[in-house]
Structures are given as C-alpha cells and as structure tokens.
Image 1 (cartoon, rainbow, N blue to C red):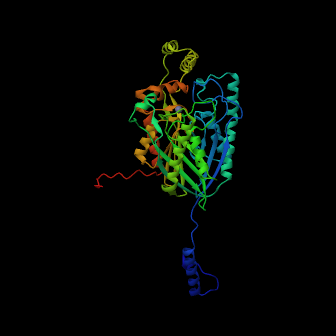
Image 2 (tube, rainbow, N blue to C red; image 1 turned 45 degrees about the vertical axis):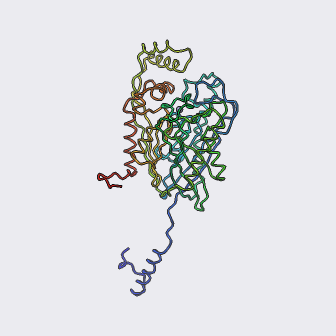
Image 3 (cartoon, rainbow, N blue to C red; image 1 turned 90 degrees about the vertical axis):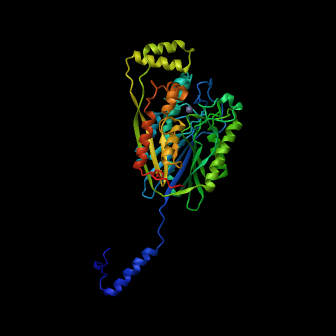
Length: 474
Ligand SMILES: [Zn+2]
C-alpha cells in the first residue's frame, strides 16, 4: 500500500497518519492464524461374508473356515493449507491387481478430482485375506463356484473403496501431523537365511530394512486421530484357513486398544525378501504385532517432527522391460519335466498356448512409482512386491528419514534388484511365473526405478543429505 495516495475523506493529514499507523501496528500484533492441515479418517470391514478362497499360498486345499480377526480397508484423507488433497488407503489384502486399482483410482478421479499422484493404495500383503480377480490366478485350484465368488467379491470392491475415501474426506477436521522413524527386528532376510536351520544359527544375514516409519495425526487439542505405521516384512506368520491381518492385523488392534478413538493403519514397506521368523503360530503372530506396536509407541512418545501443512506429489508409470518368453521347445521341455498340476506347469502351458495362438508379447510393463512430500517428510512408493534393496538405496540417497512403501497401486509381481535377478531363485525368477508374467524383468529394472524416483525427489524439492566435498573432521 502507498500511504501517500490513501486519504480518508475530510480528515487532516496528521490524523490520517495516526490512523494508518494504528492500523499497521494492530496488523502486526494481531495473532496470526497458524496454517494447519485438515485430516479425516474412515474404515470399512472387508472380511468376506461367506467362506471364500484365501490368497497368498498355492498349497491351501479348501476355502476359509472362519476368522481370527476382521480384515479392514482404512483411509487417511488429508488437505494442506492451500486445499491440496491426498489420501492414503491401506488394505488387509495380499495385493491389488492393476485392473482393480485402476478402477478405484478412476472412481476417485470422477468423484473427488484426485489425480493418481494424490492417491496411495497400499496392501499389507497379508496371506490370510481373500483372492481377488486377476491376481495370482494361476496358483489357486479354483473350481467354477470358487471363481464366481472371487468375481463377485472383486466386482463390488472398487465402489466400496471409493465410498471409504469419500467418507474420510467428509470427516475432514483441523489437524496436526508428525512423522518419525523407529526400529524393530522381526524381519529376517529369507533369501540369505535357511528357515529350517534357524535353531543352529548364531548370526543372521541381511540385508534388511528394520525401520518403523510412523505418521501421527492429532486434532488441535492434542487427541490422536490416526496412527499410520509401516514395516517391511511379509505377513506370512500364518497359513491357516482363518481370515486375519497376520502380524500387522495384531499390531493395528494393539495400537487401537492402547489409543482409544484413534485409527491405526498399517502400510507394507519393501519387504518382499523378508519373512518373520520363526513363524506358523497364532501366538507368534500376536507377539510380532505387539512388538511392532511397541516400536510404534516408542516413536509416538519421543521421536516425532511436526510437518508443515504443505503437500506435493508426483506419479509415473515407467515402461519396465520384460524379457521375451522361453521358446516353444523350451516350454515343452519344462512342461514335460514338471509334476502334474503344479502352478509352474500351468503357467508354461498357458504361455505355450499363447505362442500357438500367434500372440506377441509386450516388451515392457507400465510400472507405478510415486513420491510424496508431506511437509518435510519424503515418502516414496513402488508397485509390486518390492525387495528391501530398493528401500535401502533410496535411504542411502535421501537419508534414513525417508519412508519407502512397496506393494503400492499395482502389485504386478516381485520386483528384484539386479543382484537378485543375477542370483535367480523365487524373487528373481520363479515368482514372475506365479504372477503370470511371460518373462523375467530386464536388468535395468533397478536402475529405472531408482533413477525415476531420484528425479521425482529432486522435482519435489526433497533435500539430499549434506554432502561436502571437504571433510570437516567431525
Ligand atoms: Zn509375497
């Protein structure tokens, strides 16, 4: 404002100046409204009403026979100080296939104008949830009746998740956000340690990502609204025919018991090469859940940074290379060497049928990667069953405060590092058959994913830790 040109009508200049001075002083001493987040939460029970086939293991021989605990879909809706919206959805499911994920995100675009960059759909990877259509279809021995149940459950699922997110946005209220990292050592690298020899090992081989990332959401009075927390390890303690969220399910129950009124939601990290060990008992699943909840509580009590109400995000689908399928002759040899009715044999028969039908195979797959910046907190998300090497690399680049989620937006298959591709085995090779891919991932997979996420991080202004060219002697 130019004071010389502003005159109150009919007042001498001196009085006008005093008036303007008083206005200016009152402007500067008036308490400024602190900028604030808005947050809303919602959850829905996604436990199937009737017995249904359970996802994650090829070896089950019957549908579900009851439950240990319910399965949940939970949403944390956020709005920053400028009204930019985002939503984190966590699901007690083994994974979301692309068609269902795309349908959910299309509905959210129509209904709430949310872009894909603003939506994270993370699956816990519990191996005690229902089978979805187009997800690992080759590995389960489903008859027509079971297929129909899977189809019916899958058909209504996207609409349910859209309603869940709408409900979370309808519940928006002023909020403060905090983030921090803890640690717990439930995860064991399952590639580099032999489970049946666990009793005789005195040391365990890595790599692992033991971080426990936590986001705390409070209302302005300091009451907890939501606790979003993660860990990078397969929820494979249990392989029964009872529905459950496995150890993350127990951790969520434990935290909600300890913090009445708050919603606890679990997101899976880059845990594709990690198993909880030992395993296969309900007391162990409960104990790992409690241990994880205790690690979260330690973060809630003493290790959190308040996040400015500023949100930015980016999302891309990058063309990840897929090698050509084996030749017809190789497939025939493979089929002849297999025991009858195994999923590997079924996979090879399908691919051979597709070759015989004259199909050409896509040389790449549109693979989702995403970055969020919640205030100062970087979050990177990767599709597929992401191995720990990705989280460790991103943390080496962006610092160990960064959060890395795997199993986000499209769980297309395992995503090995170059090293795991070289080594082969389940995560490097066999799992691509389990998921119905026609070839293995190409060797630039790791470079592609990391380099795109680094570019996204730079674009969002995620700072790199201080790297000085001169040693400071500290
Ligand atoms: Zn898995």
